[in-house]
Image (tube, rainbow, N blue to C red):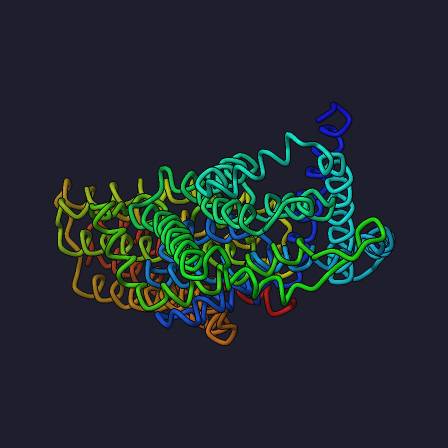
Length: 561
């Protein structure tokens, strides 16, 4: 291979990958919340999981990316291993769509697609139209890259050394599997790897080789295994369940390869060198024109076998989903460790799909809100009962709230740099404010714990009336925070509106209780030191209610979109 051929090949591969990325980003943005809803309907029904995996991979144009997201979903608790198994099977089917598109050889229209896509992307007013332009542009760039790769490999048709290598693959299929595995593992994309194989076919490199499918099929199977490397690498540092998900992906493709190679070997033995599966693929793939001659369409044969392999593999292994999970649990034994202070629903891998990532940030924020609510009640219980152990727990939980605030904010910063829809941009901005409000609720809870500590240390007493007033106000604020967290979790606009009414009630209570307590002080019914503490508790509770109201405003903002 000359330096010019290599440069053209790598340039074409770069354009292919870049075009696929642009097309994928555009499709993801167009899909938006639909991707999130697809995952929300996911159940233990593996057929539904397969459908979801197929659709998502068809949208993002990469089974590696889908499986990496699945690892992230499992790590974030968004799906369990059995659900992940179905999605992984579907991802392998979805990735065959790229190969089928390439087999249409619509390179002649690639420049038109680039021109039309660029016009829409640069000059369209509506964001949705821009995204459609991005998809068309990426589609065109992908095929231009394919054309470069094909042109760069045309000289290989007449190179005897290359023909010898190909024949060695047909004689020893394990060499083909290894070659496909290594190349795909290096470029981290089975779509690009198979696209390169199709580019070879389009250039005519396989037409001078007898029974080309015999050497192509092992390479294809190796490419299917090689795509697992991406998800295996992504699972490093993830939870044990996430590691198991990536292992199931590997297991699925390795078992499928072994089963298919055995079927092909047995078929060749029974039919004395002939292979019915290959004959079927050749018969449905048709012909094409190469240098003025009508020849077998090997690029279409590659696409069709790739599709047949992954659909058949799914049908064969679908009934054994639970068995695959059990193998993964045996090989990767261990228990999940619960870490209250760590992120439970967020994972870097999910950033690949911003719409889903935003939903996960909401879940993590809701979790942080509930921890803050529990801590407020813990601080108040310490105040009412004089339990010093609870005070220490409040201080410890406040550290967790602060850590969650930092970690979620850091994740939000990364998410803000993604391609977000208008609604998700508003939601992301609002989540910054919500996190700040929850963190401030945590700070006020810490203040309440310090007031409880002061009360214990100075042996201060309060009248039953004072305690009853505080408990009445606490009950209302508890309801406020609980409702606002629920409204945040469910986007319940009506529930968020009720927070304003409750805020008015709390303000009136605070004003009345403050006035009544000052009267008790004037009548010397309460100790002055106790009076100051009582007013400080009232003030902290009223501010907590203010922060709950602020959170409700961020929920109501989404109504405008």
